[in-house]
Image 1 (cartoon, rainbow, N blue to C red):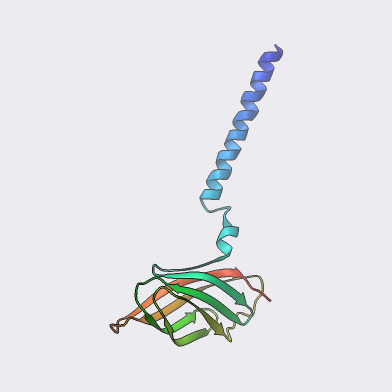
Image 2 (cartoon, rainbow, N blue to C red):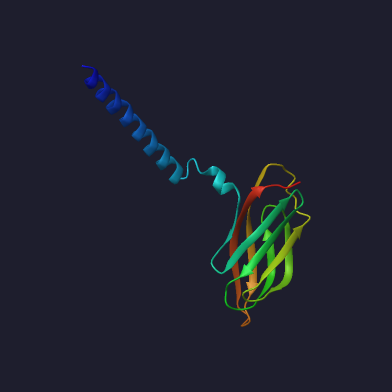
Length: 140
């Protein structure tokens, strides 16, 4: 009799534990519980890598690496929410350069999220636009 109750106990609560683990895994990998990992990110379309970034109450500093295989001339690097940009800069192929977007109008604390637009020209004169996402905690 005791062994039967032990088996029933393990079957009942073991099944409940498995269900909880499965639900937690689904929620985490499904993105519902992964909000913290998405808060701190800096990413651009293929060809430009954001290697580092800092968000302050009045600015945005981005370290960008050019993986396009050719030098580019940055016509505009713009924070679409903060009303600030950098104009006319060069980013050599396979190099990393830091850009400071100053006099932004974030005027908030906590977490800041924005889209960054990069308008550039290639050596052949072709103009292209690339979009990035930057989000993270505002540093004081």
